[in-house]
Length: 203
Image 1: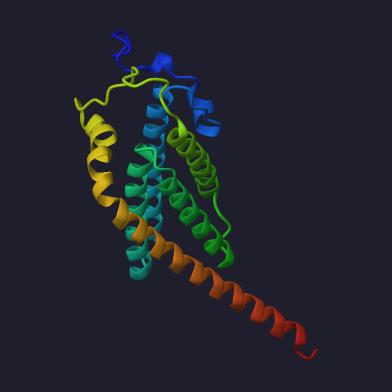
Image 2 (image 1 turned 60 degrees about the vertical axis):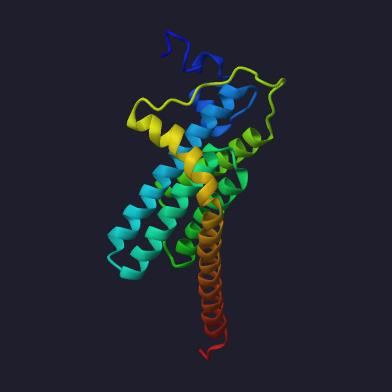
C-alpha cells in the first residue's frame, strides 16, 4: 500500500511520536491518522479498564468496569469520527477514575499516568481534527479500507456504528461520570470529616 501511495502516510505532517504527544492537523491525512490513533488509544484504555476491574474480584467493580470499558470503546469510535466531545468525555471519565482511586488511597500507577496523558493529547487531536476543513470541495483524501479485520474495525465500524451509538454513549458516559463524582465527593467528605474529628479529639 505504501509503495502504491494508497496509505497516504507520506502526506502526514508529523512523525508518530509527535502525533501522540503534540499533534498538528494540516491536511486530510493528519485527520485520518489522528482518528485512527485516537481509536486505538481508547480501545487499549477500554481493555486496561476491563482487566483492572476483573482483577478486583468485586462483582460491583467488575460491572462498573464493563460499563466503563464499553463507554471507552464507543468513545473511541467517536474520536475516529473526529468528535471532540466524545474525546473530552472519555478523558474526563478516566481522569476522575484516577482521582477517585487516589482519594481511596491508591496512588496511580505508571500506566494510569501515561494513559491520562495520552487521552489528554487525544482530546487535543480530536478537537484539531474536528476544526479542520478542506481547502476545496472534492479535495484528495485517504481511503478507508475494508480488506482486513483491522481495517473493518478501525475504518468501517466507527463510521457505521457511531451515528447510531453516539446518543447512548453520551448518556452512559455521563451517568458513569456522575457516579464517579458522587463517589469522589463522598470519599473526600468522609476524609475531611475524619480529619476534623481527629483534630478536635481530646489528647
